[in-house]
Image 1 (cartoon, helix red, strand yellow):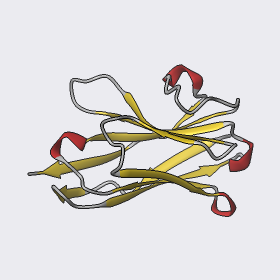
Image 2: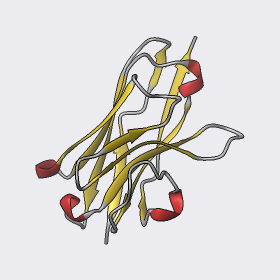
Image 3: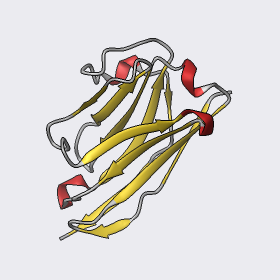
Length: 126
């Protein structure tokens, strides 16, 4: 059974940093075609913020570009999201997602993803 488990969410002041982790179990990380971080703020739709694929390409939404970095550690079966320069508008539940098939990283359509974590809360205060 494939499971994705996020951690690292916290409450921080604006300008602070956090690193989110997503540990994959029940599947080999390198066999996923694509992985991503999504977020959902209260009252808003879920949005894809960062994606990476098996080719090593990455893509970011305009709202976080230059502040967040997606990376992975294959031996640890872990996906990361380094978040710097956090803003109050970054407050949301953050989810990692994985797709069995290859994807083009610019496509952040959530329907592409087969597996989802339960989410980790990030709260940024001004």
